[in-house]
Length: 140
Image 1: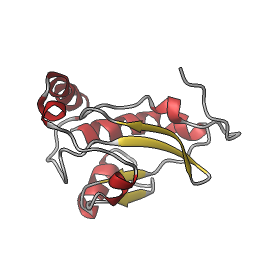
Image 2 (image 1 turned 30 degrees about the vertical axis):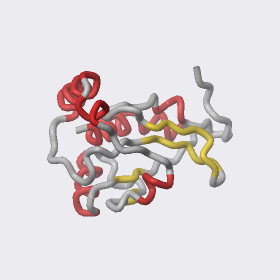
Image 3 (image 1 turned 90 degrees about the horizontal axis):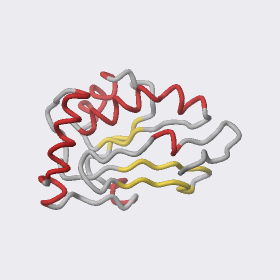
């Protein structure tokens, strides 16, 4: 449900993000066929996608797995309800304890990173975009 919510938000903000000169890529922990189906269901089938069911990229970007409180704590439960209402429920794929992240990479270097601290923890995508001139967007 959290991946569905993130994809829905990304699809809704895609035009703004790309207009700022930022190219989007998606990393999925699902198996390739499931990942393709899910990404396409949100109209993002043309976005480069990296399927990582072995979680090698997740480890490389130092993304943690949820502990019991992050998995079943009150904030995560409320986030799960919000995500389901927003983007619908789908069958889980891959490691359901894996926390996500969003990264802005420029010239091979991570210039902004958002590592989720809870399941369903999502960043403000516009704060991670880059203007067409290559200058990072202002953050607050």
